[in-house]
Image 1 (cartoon, rainbow, N blue to C red):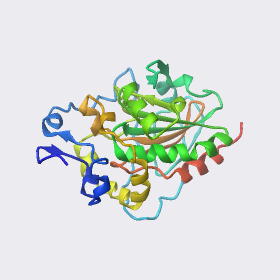
Image 2: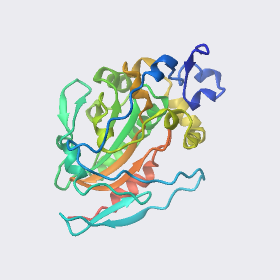
Image 3: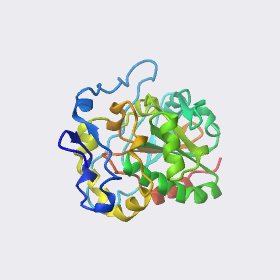
Image 4: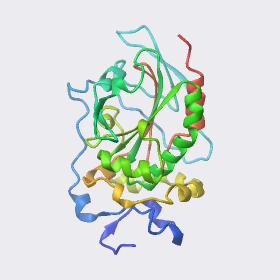
Length: 279
Protein backbone atom coordinates (compact mmCIF):
# COMPACT_ATOMS: atom_id res chain seq x y z
CA UNK A 1 0.00 0.00 0.00
CA UNK A 2 1.24 3.44 -0.81
CA UNK A 3 1.93 6.08 1.81
CA UNK A 4 -0.32 8.90 3.03
CA UNK A 5 0.42 10.98 -0.06
CA UNK A 6 -2.16 8.95 -2.03
CA UNK A 7 -5.94 8.83 -2.01
CA UNK A 8 -7.94 5.74 -2.95
CA UNK A 9 -11.58 4.70 -3.20
CA UNK A 10 -13.84 3.35 -0.47
CA UNK A 11 -12.78 -0.19 -1.29
CA UNK A 12 -9.35 0.52 0.20
CA UNK A 13 -10.91 0.13 3.62
CA UNK A 14 -11.51 -3.60 3.11
CA UNK A 15 -9.03 -5.33 5.36
CA UNK A 16 -8.23 -8.41 3.28
CA UNK A 17 -4.53 -9.06 2.76
CA UNK A 18 -4.82 -10.99 -0.56
CA UNK A 19 -6.61 -8.02 -2.10
CA UNK A 20 -4.56 -5.20 -0.63
CA UNK A 21 -2.30 -4.91 -3.65
CA UNK A 22 -4.87 -5.51 -6.34
CA UNK A 23 -8.13 -3.66 -5.71
CA UNK A 24 -6.87 -0.23 -4.69
CA UNK A 25 -6.54 1.99 -7.73
CA UNK A 26 -4.78 5.00 -6.24
CA UNK A 27 -4.37 8.48 -7.62
CA UNK A 28 -2.18 11.25 -6.24
CA UNK A 29 -3.54 14.28 -4.42
CA UNK A 30 -1.86 16.47 -7.00
CA UNK A 31 -3.81 14.73 -9.77
CA UNK A 32 -7.10 15.26 -7.94
CA UNK A 33 -6.42 18.95 -7.50
CA UNK A 34 -5.85 19.27 -11.24
CA UNK A 35 -9.12 17.56 -12.24
CA UNK A 36 -11.10 19.85 -14.56
CA UNK A 37 -14.79 20.53 -14.13
CA UNK A 38 -17.21 18.30 -16.08
CA UNK A 39 -17.98 19.16 -19.69
CA UNK A 40 -21.07 21.30 -20.13
CA UNK A 41 -23.95 19.14 -21.32
CA UNK A 42 -26.29 21.82 -22.61
CA UNK A 43 -24.35 22.77 -25.75
CA UNK A 44 -25.94 22.74 -29.20
CA UNK A 45 -23.56 19.93 -30.15
CA UNK A 46 -25.25 17.46 -27.84
CA UNK A 47 -28.70 19.03 -27.70
CA UNK A 48 -30.85 19.79 -24.69
CA UNK A 49 -31.88 16.99 -22.38
CA UNK A 50 -32.93 16.29 -18.84
CA UNK A 51 -30.71 14.18 -16.63
CA UNK A 52 -31.97 11.16 -14.78
CA UNK A 53 -33.24 11.94 -11.31
CA UNK A 54 -32.82 9.22 -8.76
CA UNK A 55 -33.43 8.92 -5.05
CA UNK A 56 -30.56 7.09 -3.36
CA UNK A 57 -31.61 4.08 -1.34
CA UNK A 58 -29.38 1.97 0.79
CA UNK A 59 -31.90 -0.74 1.60
CA UNK A 60 -31.09 -4.22 0.30
CA UNK A 61 -34.50 -4.21 -1.37
CA UNK A 62 -34.48 -3.37 -5.07
CA UNK A 63 -36.37 -0.41 -6.44
CA UNK A 64 -39.47 -1.73 -8.25
CA UNK A 65 -39.39 -1.43 -12.03
CA UNK A 66 -41.80 1.18 -13.34
CA UNK A 67 -43.38 1.91 -16.69
CA UNK A 68 -43.30 5.56 -17.62
CA UNK A 69 -44.90 7.17 -20.64
CA UNK A 70 -43.37 10.41 -21.90
CA UNK A 71 -44.58 12.67 -24.66
CA UNK A 72 -42.76 14.84 -27.14
CA UNK A 73 -43.57 17.00 -30.13
CA UNK A 74 -42.00 14.47 -32.48
CA UNK A 75 -43.75 11.34 -31.26
CA UNK A 76 -47.17 10.91 -29.62
CA UNK A 77 -45.76 8.78 -26.85
CA UNK A 78 -42.62 6.95 -25.78
CA UNK A 79 -42.42 4.09 -23.31
CA UNK A 80 -39.53 4.08 -20.87
CA UNK A 81 -38.97 1.27 -18.42
CA UNK A 82 -36.76 2.49 -15.63
CA UNK A 83 -35.63 1.94 -12.09
CA UNK A 84 -36.91 5.42 -11.20
CA UNK A 85 -38.73 8.34 -12.79
CA UNK A 86 -36.26 9.49 -15.43
CA UNK A 87 -36.45 11.66 -18.51
CA UNK A 88 -34.22 12.36 -21.47
CA UNK A 89 -34.90 14.28 -24.65
CA UNK A 90 -36.94 12.34 -27.17
CA UNK A 91 -34.00 12.20 -29.56
CA UNK A 92 -31.29 11.15 -27.08
CA UNK A 93 -30.74 7.95 -29.06
CA UNK A 94 -30.17 9.97 -32.21
CA UNK A 95 -27.75 12.29 -30.45
CA UNK A 96 -25.83 9.36 -29.00
CA UNK A 97 -25.70 7.62 -32.38
CA UNK A 98 -23.32 10.27 -33.71
CA UNK A 99 -20.82 9.88 -30.85
CA UNK A 100 -17.52 8.30 -31.87
CA UNK A 101 -15.64 5.89 -29.59
CA UNK A 102 -12.92 3.26 -30.21
CA UNK A 103 -12.63 -0.50 -30.54
CA UNK A 104 -9.97 -2.27 -28.49
CA UNK A 105 -7.88 -2.31 -31.68
CA UNK A 106 -7.96 1.49 -31.76
CA UNK A 107 -10.37 1.87 -34.68
CA UNK A 108 -12.97 4.68 -34.38
CA UNK A 109 -16.59 3.54 -34.46
CA UNK A 110 -19.89 5.41 -34.20
CA UNK A 111 -22.57 4.38 -31.74
CA UNK A 112 -25.04 3.95 -34.60
CA UNK A 113 -22.85 1.17 -35.97
CA UNK A 114 -22.90 -0.87 -32.75
CA UNK A 115 -26.44 -2.25 -33.15
CA UNK A 116 -29.43 -2.15 -35.48
CA UNK A 117 -30.78 1.38 -35.15
CA UNK A 118 -34.27 0.39 -36.25
CA UNK A 119 -35.40 -2.57 -34.15
CA UNK A 120 -32.25 -3.94 -32.52
CA UNK A 121 -32.20 -4.26 -28.73
CA UNK A 122 -28.97 -3.31 -26.99
CA UNK A 123 -27.79 -3.14 -23.40
CA UNK A 124 -25.16 -0.42 -23.10
CA UNK A 125 -23.11 -0.70 -19.92
CA UNK A 126 -20.88 2.29 -19.26
CA UNK A 127 -18.16 1.29 -16.83
CA UNK A 128 -16.17 3.83 -14.85
CA UNK A 129 -12.58 3.39 -16.04
CA UNK A 130 -10.61 0.31 -17.04
CA UNK A 131 -8.48 0.47 -13.89
CA UNK A 132 -11.45 0.44 -11.49
CA UNK A 133 -11.63 -2.90 -9.57
CA UNK A 134 -15.41 -2.56 -9.25
CA UNK A 135 -15.62 -2.28 -13.03
CA UNK A 136 -13.64 -5.50 -13.42
CA UNK A 137 -16.32 -7.09 -11.27
CA UNK A 138 -19.10 -5.61 -13.44
CA UNK A 139 -17.30 -6.69 -16.62
CA UNK A 140 -17.01 -10.20 -15.19
CA UNK A 141 -20.77 -10.29 -14.52
CA UNK A 142 -21.47 -9.01 -18.03
CA UNK A 143 -19.28 -11.74 -19.51
CA UNK A 144 -21.09 -14.43 -17.52
CA UNK A 145 -24.47 -13.08 -18.68
CA UNK A 146 -23.51 -12.55 -22.32
CA UNK A 147 -24.69 -15.94 -23.54
CA UNK A 148 -28.12 -15.39 -21.99
CA UNK A 149 -28.45 -11.97 -23.63
CA UNK A 150 -27.16 -13.28 -26.97
CA UNK A 151 -29.69 -16.13 -27.01
CA UNK A 152 -32.46 -13.55 -26.51
CA UNK A 153 -31.27 -11.44 -29.42
CA UNK A 154 -29.91 -8.67 -27.20
CA UNK A 155 -26.62 -7.00 -28.09
CA UNK A 156 -24.40 -6.49 -25.04
CA UNK A 157 -22.03 -3.52 -25.23
CA UNK A 158 -19.50 -2.44 -22.59
CA UNK A 159 -17.73 0.92 -22.69
CA UNK A 160 -15.05 2.22 -20.37
CA UNK A 161 -13.06 5.39 -19.78
CA UNK A 162 -9.53 5.14 -21.12
CA UNK A 163 -7.60 4.52 -24.31
CA UNK A 164 -7.88 1.31 -26.37
CA UNK A 165 -4.66 -0.12 -24.92
CA UNK A 166 -6.18 0.18 -21.43
CA UNK A 167 -9.29 -1.61 -22.65
CA UNK A 168 -7.11 -4.42 -24.00
CA UNK A 169 -5.49 -4.85 -20.59
CA UNK A 170 -8.87 -5.54 -19.02
CA UNK A 171 -9.97 -7.76 -21.92
CA UNK A 172 -6.82 -9.87 -21.86
CA UNK A 173 -6.41 -10.24 -18.11
CA UNK A 174 -10.04 -10.67 -16.95
CA UNK A 175 -10.65 -11.97 -19.70
CA UNK A 176 -13.46 -10.20 -21.57
CA UNK A 177 -14.62 -10.51 -25.21
CA UNK A 178 -12.99 -7.72 -27.21
CA UNK A 179 -15.73 -7.66 -29.84
CA UNK A 180 -18.15 -6.01 -27.39
CA UNK A 181 -15.72 -3.80 -25.45
CA UNK A 182 -15.08 -0.18 -26.42
CA UNK A 183 -13.00 2.75 -25.18
CA UNK A 184 -14.21 6.32 -24.66
CA UNK A 185 -11.07 8.25 -23.62
CA UNK A 186 -12.75 11.67 -23.86
CA UNK A 187 -15.90 10.49 -22.04
CA UNK A 188 -18.11 11.74 -24.89
CA UNK A 189 -20.89 9.21 -24.30
CA UNK A 190 -20.79 9.87 -20.56
CA UNK A 191 -21.29 13.59 -21.16
CA UNK A 192 -24.17 13.06 -23.59
CA UNK A 193 -25.95 10.80 -21.09
CA UNK A 194 -25.22 13.12 -18.17
CA UNK A 195 -23.56 10.53 -15.95
CA UNK A 196 -22.27 11.64 -12.55
CA UNK A 197 -18.75 12.95 -12.15
CA UNK A 198 -16.73 14.20 -9.22
CA UNK A 199 -14.70 13.49 -6.11
CA UNK A 200 -17.68 13.04 -3.80
CA UNK A 201 -19.48 10.58 -6.08
CA UNK A 202 -16.32 8.57 -6.60
CA UNK A 203 -14.96 8.25 -3.06
CA UNK A 204 -17.57 9.31 -0.52
CA UNK A 205 -21.05 8.34 -1.79
CA UNK A 206 -22.90 5.97 0.59
CA UNK A 207 -24.18 3.96 -2.40
CA UNK A 208 -20.66 2.58 -2.78
CA UNK A 209 -21.21 0.47 0.33
CA UNK A 210 -23.18 -1.97 -1.84
CA UNK A 211 -19.88 -3.40 -3.05
CA UNK A 212 -19.31 -5.08 0.32
CA UNK A 213 -22.25 -7.41 -0.36
CA UNK A 214 -20.45 -8.60 -3.51
CA UNK A 215 -17.05 -9.11 -1.92
CA UNK A 216 -16.57 -12.70 -3.15
CA UNK A 217 -17.42 -11.76 -6.74
CA UNK A 218 -15.06 -8.79 -6.53
CA UNK A 219 -12.22 -10.90 -5.18
CA UNK A 220 -12.65 -13.38 -8.04
CA UNK A 221 -12.83 -10.64 -10.69
CA UNK A 222 -9.58 -8.92 -9.62
CA UNK A 223 -7.50 -12.09 -9.58
CA UNK A 224 -5.44 -10.78 -12.53
CA UNK A 225 -6.10 -7.09 -11.94
CA UNK A 226 -3.48 -4.50 -12.83
CA UNK A 227 -3.45 -0.84 -11.91
CA UNK A 228 -1.81 -0.21 -15.29
CA UNK A 229 -5.31 -0.23 -16.79
CA UNK A 230 -6.01 3.11 -15.06
CA UNK A 231 -6.29 6.00 -17.57
CA UNK A 232 -3.17 8.12 -18.01
CA UNK A 233 -5.48 11.13 -17.79
CA UNK A 234 -6.27 10.83 -14.08
CA UNK A 235 -9.34 13.06 -14.37
CA UNK A 236 -11.10 10.03 -15.84
CA UNK A 237 -11.09 8.18 -12.50
CA UNK A 238 -13.75 10.56 -11.17
CA UNK A 239 -16.29 9.46 -13.78
CA UNK A 240 -19.26 7.31 -12.77
CA UNK A 241 -21.01 4.85 -15.05
CA UNK A 242 -24.53 3.72 -15.83
CA UNK A 243 -26.72 1.19 -17.62
CA UNK A 244 -29.01 1.81 -20.58
CA UNK A 245 -31.31 -0.28 -22.75
CA UNK A 246 -32.20 0.77 -26.28
CA UNK A 247 -34.53 -0.53 -28.96
CA UNK A 248 -33.13 1.02 -32.08
CA UNK A 249 -32.72 4.68 -31.14
CA UNK A 250 -35.48 4.51 -28.55
CA UNK A 251 -34.33 4.66 -24.94
CA UNK A 252 -36.21 2.09 -22.86
CA UNK A 253 -34.29 2.09 -19.59
CA UNK A 254 -31.81 4.43 -17.95
CA UNK A 255 -29.94 4.15 -14.67
CA UNK A 256 -27.06 6.26 -13.40
CA UNK A 257 -24.62 4.80 -10.89
CA UNK A 258 -24.89 6.89 -7.75
CA UNK A 259 -21.35 6.02 -6.65
CA UNK A 260 -18.44 3.65 -7.27
CA UNK A 261 -19.68 0.06 -7.40
CA UNK A 262 -23.37 1.03 -7.51
CA UNK A 263 -24.28 -1.17 -10.49
CA UNK A 264 -27.67 -2.05 -11.94
CA UNK A 265 -28.71 -5.67 -11.22
CA UNK A 266 -28.30 -7.61 -14.48
CA UNK A 267 -31.31 -9.79 -13.68
CA UNK A 268 -33.46 -6.65 -13.76
CA UNK A 269 -31.87 -5.57 -17.04
CA UNK A 270 -32.60 -8.96 -18.62
CA UNK A 271 -36.19 -8.81 -17.37
CA UNK A 272 -36.61 -5.41 -19.02
CA UNK A 273 -35.24 -6.71 -22.32
CA UNK A 274 -37.73 -9.58 -22.24
CA UNK A 275 -40.60 -7.10 -21.84
CA UNK A 276 -39.70 -5.06 -24.91
CA UNK A 277 -42.76 -5.04 -27.23
CA UNK A 278 -42.31 -6.89 -30.52
CA UNK A 279 -42.65 -4.62 -33.56
